[in-house]
Amino acid sequence: MECLATSRGRGGAGTPESMRGLLLTLLLLLAWQPAAASVELSLNDASISLGPYLSIYRDADGSLDVTDVLENDLPWERWHKESVSLGMDRADFWFRLEIDNQTPFPQQRLLEIAYPSLDKITIYQIRSGISDKEFVMGDELPFSNRPINHHYFVTPLDFRANETQTILIHVKTEGVLQLPLTLWEERAFAAYDQSRQLLAGMYFGVMLVMLLYNLFMFLGVGDRSHIYYVGFVLSVPLFVSSLMGYSFQYFWPDAPAWNGKSIGLFLTATVLFAGLFTNNFLELYKPEKPAWVRQGMKTMIGLICLMFLTVFLLDYNTMLRIVIITSVLACASALVVGVHGWITHQVQARFYVLAWSALLLGGIILAGNKFSLIPQNSFTDNAVQIGSSLLVVLLSFAMAERINNEKRKRYRAQMQALQNERKARNAQQEANRQLEAKVTERTEALARANATLQELSARDALTGLYNRRYLDELLVREYTRSYRHREPVSLLLLDIDHFKQFNDTYGHLVGDDCLRLVAACIEECANRAADTVARYGGEEFCVVLPDTDLEGAEAVAERIRQRTEKLRFEVAGKLVPITASLGVACHFPTQVDAAEALLKAADDALYSAKDAGRNRVACAPTHGATNTSDA
Image (cartoon, rainbow, N blue to C red; front, side):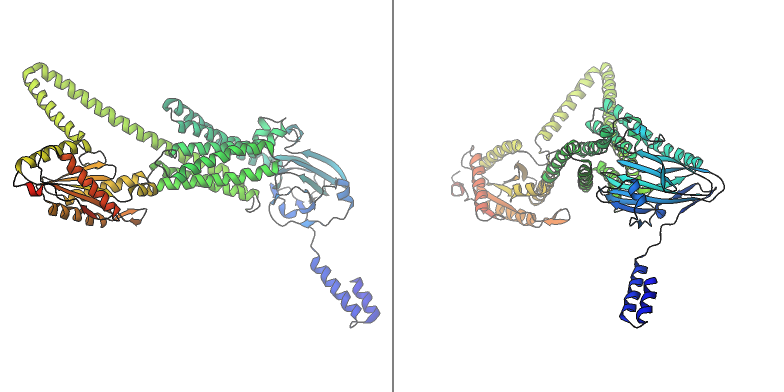
């Protein structure tokens, strides 16, 4: 305004000098920010969040001390948010706060910084422009430096009657810089902290109970999933304890160097045991699992093992970035394989996906909190505790369901054994009373059992068709019968086209479903009582057609080929075509022991069908037809 008045005196309102003065005044008004309001103490305030009252100065080269800050007019920046979250910044930061006690009574307050992972904090009480008290603490200093024994940074402040006091806070840290500041009345802080410690105790108590429970389960059951789960349940609270400052307070208060590495170490251990548990619990190591699942899980576990090196070889800032990013990727990978297990109808995968989603969400919220993408509050600060608690509960359901399934299987087996034992005992008692009748009954039962056993031994376990051994015996019998009765006998050999590629693409379980479907199709087409369908081996099937000439056999083969081509086989909602090649051979037997020649002729015809482009029927020349009258 003085500049504006001077310019008016010289040249008047319309001169260039007056215009320049007016412009300068407007720029100053736009650039001006009101100083941060002071905190006014009253006798009734239980707590005051100090974020909106802060002014911040970034000391890029860390060259200032408290005298420099007090003597120089620094360009302080007004902070308007409830909490301070500045991400990973290695610069020094100064925070200024004005606190006004207008009451006629002296007051005591507690200044709480509810974030324990700050390397060095210095708090200055300024009276009359001079530093009156100084508190130095941080997680790179011994825990005994703290004025109050608490896992957070809690500092006692005193305010004289009718006094306005300046508080300066100097923070230097290699990790995430967060400064959740609260000014507490002492009794209110004690009541609030008691509730907070109770919740923390409940959390750690639950984790301890789950750890001991699963440890005893491992000792009783011997399932490796339980010991991996024990390692996971042990690592999670150790990580949370280090993150919240409890470990530094109770376990290693005189080892600040180790305290800085413990967060990364326990987070890495958590992710490693989670990966091992996932691999064992979802049985990802089995050969029938897709290659991308097996190899991807091995790769992820290897990367997690390499994370241990970063804890000890890299500086804290770089280590923390790598560990957090790798942990989120590992959690996402575990969720992907869990979803895959759910899709492939693994019952335990459903609980696993729900459980892991809770922890992944908590990890993402924590990572966003640390990288200043998500505001800091009580929920985001405790996201990992909430997520890990839900994880433990839901995984306990999954483990319980798995154990209950095993118990049900054992119970059914025991009941069956008990029933068999009772039957045997009753049978023995009956045998003692009526020995001769029982011997006859036993003989008949043995004959029936032998017949049933013989029938089962002749069947293929996968398709239910006759197996190769039965086929060899049947072919000799039918060939001999045809020779005796001077009747033709035909043989079909069927091979599913490109079945190896099918198995490689969709997996053996899907391939087994395909084999069963084709087997049912063949049985429907070869529907005479005398016709016999057998699994020849792998993806090959054989059909024996007694009293059937080459024309009739070719018609049956073509019907099978067409029906196979029309099969609707879906994999993951996608229709997969199935085709087959068939070889047909017919003999009018001229000698009794030429069954193998019939089989070879059909096999040669099958290869001819394949060489001609597959999905077709090829016939071998009829053997012995011209000699039937002589026979």
